[in-house]
Length: 465
Ligand SMILES: Cc1ncc(COP(=O)(O)O)c(C=O)c1O
Image (cartoon, rainbow, N blue to C red; front, side, top):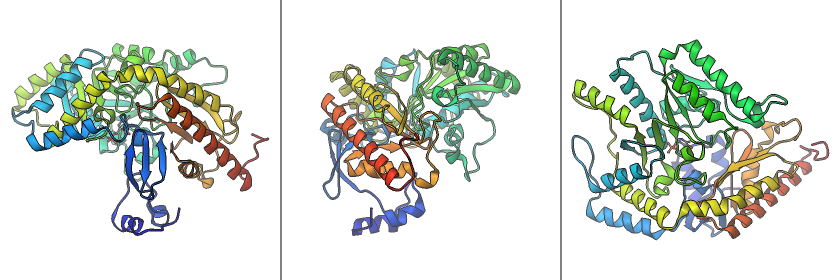
C-alpha cells in the first residue's frame, strides 16, 4: 500500500501505533477504517471487509449495535461519571457486578473493575500477593505463567506474557515470574506421544518446577483456557485436569484469563466451563462490553475476599483502584451487552454456527501451506508452514505474516497473523452460516494467492512441500 492521501500523512505525522513496525509504518501508512455494519467494516475509500478477527478478538456483536449506543448516550446524560472509591457507588456498577456474579462459571464472591485486560491481570497478581500477606505467607509470591501465553502489556501483564517480543528491550520479565511449558501438542509433542501422555509430561514438568523453586514460594498459576495471541493453542486432552491437581497439591491459586474466551467464544459462556476449570480469580474484558466501551473485571472467591477484608482492616484501607474502575457509561454498556447475549441466545447461536467454521478450517488443512487447522467454538487458527512433514516455517525475511494480511485485505478479509506463523480466526459472535462460508472462501483464496506469490518469487516449491 502506498501513502496516497492526506489522512495517511496526518496519521504518520501524529500517531504512535501500538504493535506496529514503527519504521515500516512511515512508508506503508495505515489502513483507515471509517464505519462498520454487522461483521463488516468499511475503510475510508468505501472498500468492504469481512472482519475475521472481531477487531482484536473482541467486537463480539459486530459494528452497529444501536442498543449499546443508546444506552451509552442515556448514561452520559444521566450520570456521565462517578467513582467507586471510599464508600461511593452507582447503579451501573452494582447492576453489572450482580449480573456477572449470577453468570460466573464457579461460585464467585466479588467483582472488581478495571479498564483493560492487562490491568485486570496486573491487579490479579496484586490481589494474590495481598491475600498471601493476609494469610501470613510473605514468601508465597511467585507466579507461574506459560511460554506463549498472552496476558497483556503492563509491566506485570507483559512479564506474565510468554512471548519473547513482549520482553525484548523492555527489560522484562520482572523477578518472580516463571514460565511453564506451552501446551501446544502440534509443536512440542514427542514422536509417538499421545495427547494424554504429552499432558502428563507437562504436568510433571510443572510439578518439578514448583518443587525446584519451593512450593512455599509459589503463589499462583495463570492461564488462558485457549492461548489466543500465542497461536490459538487448544489445550491437549487431560491437560487442565492434571495441572489443576498439581496446583491443589501445593496450595497454589489458579487465575483464569478469560479476556478472549469469556462470553461465548468457546461455545460456553466462559472457557472455564468448556475446559472444566476451577479458578480462584477470573479476569475478563473485550466481549464483556462487546468492545463498545473499555472495561475489564476480576471476579474473586469468597476465600480471597475474606482474607482481603482482614488485611484492609489491619492496614486501614484496600489501597488499590483506578479512577475509571466501574465507569458508569462502560458499566451500562457492558450490562446491556450481557442482556443482548441472553435475549439473542448468543451461546446457542455460537454452538450452531461454530461447527461450520471448525469444519471449514479443518478442510483448509489440505492446502499445501497449512500444517495444522485447530480451534474450538468461534476461535481457530491455521498454522502456515513451508513444509508440512517438517513443520518448518518460511524464512522470516520473506515476511509471510505481513504478506498474508495484505493479500487477505485485497480479498476483503481481515485476518491476523500471529508471531508463531499461524493465521488466527475469531469473527464476531453474531456471524451467520452464510458469512462463515464467505469467510472460508476468502480465506482459501488468500492462501492460494499467497502460494502463487511464493512460487512467483521463487521462495517455495509446493511439490517439495
Ligand atoms: C488473553 C488476553 N489477556 C489479556 C489481554 C490484554 O488485554 P488488553 O489489551 O485489553 O490490555 C489480551 C489482549 O489481547 C488477551 O488476549
